[in-house]
Amino acid sequence: MTPPSDPRSGILIDAAELRIVSLPLLTPFVISTGTMTGKTFPLLVLKGDGLEGIAEGVMDPAPDYLEETVPGAIAFLRDVLLPQIVGKRFASPYELAAILDPWRGNRMAKAVVEMAFWDLWAKSLNIPLKSAFGGVRDAVDVGVSLGIAPIEKTLERVAEAVEQGYKRTKLKIAQGHDVALVRAVRETFPDIKLTVDANTDYGLVDLPTLRDLDAFGLDYIEQPLAFDDIHDHAQVQAALKTAVCLDESIRTPVDARKALEARATRVINIKVGRVGGFAAARSIHDISAAFGAPVWCGGMLESGIGRAHNIHLATLANFTKPGDTSSSSRYFQRDIVNEPLEATNGEMRVPTHGPGIGVTLDRDYLETVTLQTEEVRA
Ligand code: OSB
Ligand code: MG
Image 1 (tube, rainbow, N blue to C red):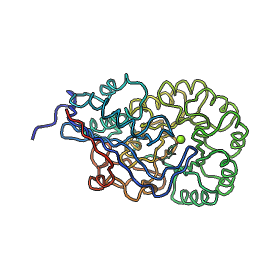
Image 2: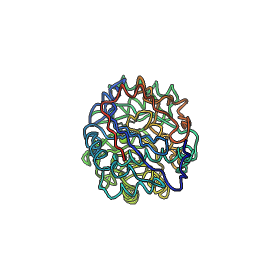
Image 3: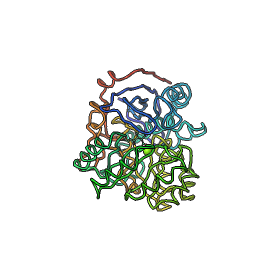
Image 4: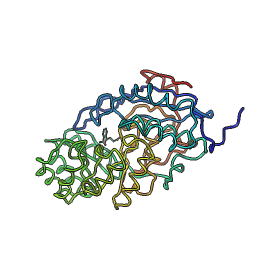
């Protein structure tokens, strides 16, 4: 057996395994832009030094959350990004990120590669992923995100989440499915920490509706306006007592700086898979802290692999609001990881089954839910 190479001299990536995985969802998840009945995503395994770094992509099959898509990401990863890094040695994730950086956009695709390498790097150092970027907690606070459903059904789901001890309830809203819903939930649950997420469904013409929502003591209103807007959100924020929280609109640390400077947002939803990886996610976290703005860790209905990455990210100090990483069993009958990722009393423990992300692939089940596999070798 050859000893692992000195991490300071870098990890040689000798192969990449790129899959498309599709998991059925227990219940369709409805948001203002559409309905998801399954979760289809790219899964990347980077191999080097006898270790495996793993990550998943958060893009959807069609461009309905942001512009990136699963087929587009697979092609870009297979034909461009992976051939650039397989067969090369990288001393740190920052060195690898410098290779990805010159390409425009495509942050979700870049994030898959960057995050898999962070996992590989942490494993080579024999430390948990969170320790590789300075996380400070052993467990993170989490809430639930409830898809659009009739009011009665939503009341049942809120009751269940509260009963289970989740620390915040987020209601998905859309035009015509907003004020009455929030009023009903607030009347039944006067004291819970409650938020709404519009996933871009409103415009400035809807300020009266957003003002009506201002009366319900919400912790924040997430992404009311367009996915690519920062400027107009400042008008919304100026008109409301409730904090605006941006999700889709924040793709980069510069976006975060501009949005905070313009007072277009007072809270940021950080999704590591949306912003290009951990380096960008941590910058957005740090910039927000400098502005006195709390952040929280969002989700994209990830499998256990993405969930583990999200939990490690949320251990950074300024993640002071509950995140969206609820129990995997709320979404999937069976997950592709061996270790259950289940919340207790609204807390998700950082997985530590080994170094890195701290969860392992259930390879047998993975085979049965893989639609396509590609290998890139040096
Ligand atoms: O806007 O945060 C969002 C799911 C799919 C697309 C967008 C969003 C979401 C969620 C789900 O809110 C959060 C989760 O439980 O992973
Ligand atoms: Mg959102």
